[in-house]
Length: 324
Image (cartoon, rainbow, N blue to C red):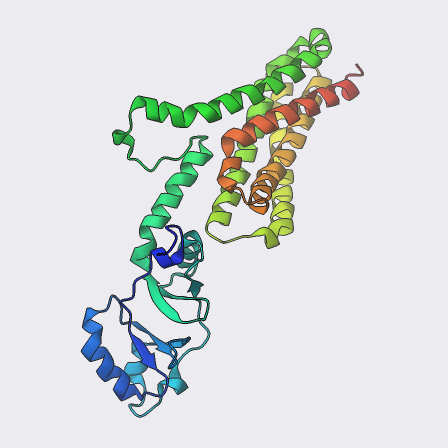
């Protein structure tokens, strides 16, 4: 028996196998005789006399090839395969990324044990997507259908993360308390806190969502970490400049804020957006590096972390610009 999360647990043995010393005519006769009972015949796998996987040949190739040609001469040897012990999530990623119809599964001796077809992984893809969505919303995943769960079960899956986020948010209130001496002198600064923290949270959530999805589909990996971080930094600079410029003009035209206050808030937004984009890229990659699900670094947690960092930047810049 194979582990329930392994490739071996979802494979089927209903495949067509050929021998490398057969002719095309012999292979076609074999497919006609045994193919009707197989799950897939569009791709046939070539085995050695010891059942070791040597390559594959498509039905199209067989149909157009010379009937006297040997399978060994027309088969493809550059193929993707998985081990029976590989995680089935990795298999699902390969299907979604490369668009395969089937992928062979081998054992430690490289003997062909079965194949995994696209329909075999559809449920896995759906389950993983659902699990990621739940984690990104700070909800513990459940295998049960929504309507089959009681209110208590639903609440139980949500309370742990709500407690974690609530307690971690006390850090934000602690920072505001620490800088009360600034707010007491410039009360207007408190009115900009929601806008600044929301901008930071939204910016970080955008980056983390894109990066998490790219990791889940195999589009990027740890090897791409530097490129991803540098790209998000450039995105942060562009977005930050646009948002801070618009905000500066807005404050000058539509509010009574002093020019120093307008400059302070706009500069904070610029720093906030850049930092948030960087954190939105770095935290999922860090989670992947330490073998955690990157989805836990999604909007809820990112927002909580960014709120605290942004307030430190805000009040730090206020101390410098306002000379407090």
